[in-house]
Image (cartoon, rainbow, N blue to C red):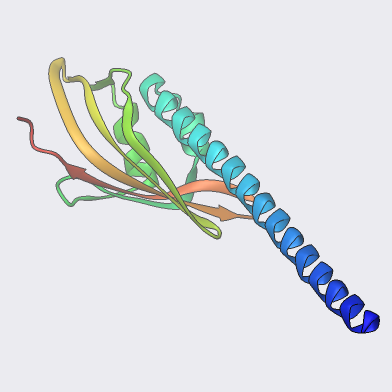
Length: 157
């Protein structure tokens, strides 16, 4: 009888230990996900700052070579045309804040989305652009870069 109870106790301990290991593995994944979300948030924030400052090197360093943007009018931009547009002397973007920011992780792909109310001047004339966006980051060779941007205009009220 004692042997039977010891067998059940050993089985219980084994199941308990497996549960602890599983919980520790889940905690480790959660910590890695939180660290990655933090890293991607910083990349996004730094890119926004670089755009406002017209820091061409920093803008390009965050972009994949095959970068594409679909703007609010449905027009397609490449990395070159996107960067050239930002560097234009005609464009001045005021510092802006991203709202409703979210990061969703899918292996080596991350979707970063938010809402922005951008202001600035184009050819000296003030503009306001209110939009939602989704930035698609991909990890290649251990480095995260933005590969695609989709913008949807939000009508001004």
